[in-house]
Length: 165
Length: 148
Figure 1 (cartoon, chains in turn green, yellow):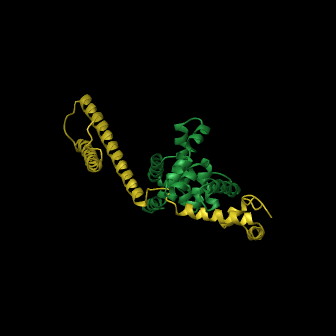
Figure 2 (cartoon, chains in turn yellow, blue):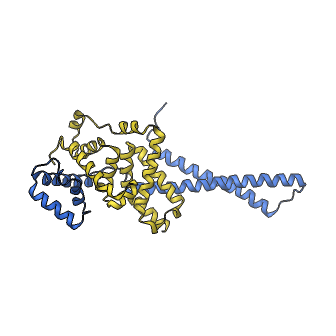
Figure 3 (cartoon, one colour):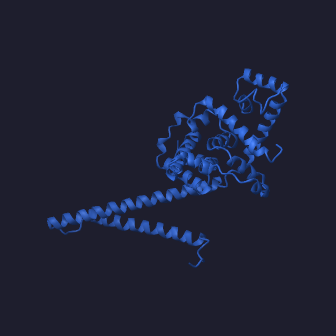
């Protein structure tokens, strides 16, 4: 793949990659750094991507996800505590004050487990297939449907508390 | 039939929404949704939520910004090359000067000219790169008028 083509594709994936990284890291600035790092890595060694092994998108997203997990580990050695920190959602009063529906949806999303947030972004925001999601998240393809369903039910419950869908 | 959150169909509801089921599984979901109100409601609820997520703005960083970011990456790579040439040039010059000093030869050759040229060229590249960065920062820094 030519470097210019790769740059164009990476720029197109940027928004989705940033959304995914934000869900993992819990803040957009760190997420932007992680995506930029991943882009630098790819552009620094473009031959590390082998197009015969599949499309660039899942490969790149897997790189971004791994980078985010590295950052999380460095930030806090105990993973369970990281989950607690990241899963803090705004309270009911804060939610009521937010007029924007996107913000409320983001708040509901933020109340979910990290894995649930990732899988929802990959499928419902980025429209990736189950096979590609399995590749990015490094889980068996058969697990994708069940995890995604549990995530959606959890999101529906969190969002449905205050809204009629 | 009565269940909670479409439990009697389970994860296949999501598979149905995403078009990831076999024909047989799809038929199973459709038959269940005809007889189970809860399953039907959950299916509609999850579909609506999926659409909302798809339309939501989960990232404010657009394609153009990522293009610029990658351009900056190219600038950084150029700077790295500049440093490499400079350090390499300086090391070669020092080595060559030492050699000259030890052997007692002091006449200028074409190699010396290239080495010295490389050092000054590297310095010039670095200077231009840093100057450009400073100028950009000066233009865009919103805190430049803040006194500490």
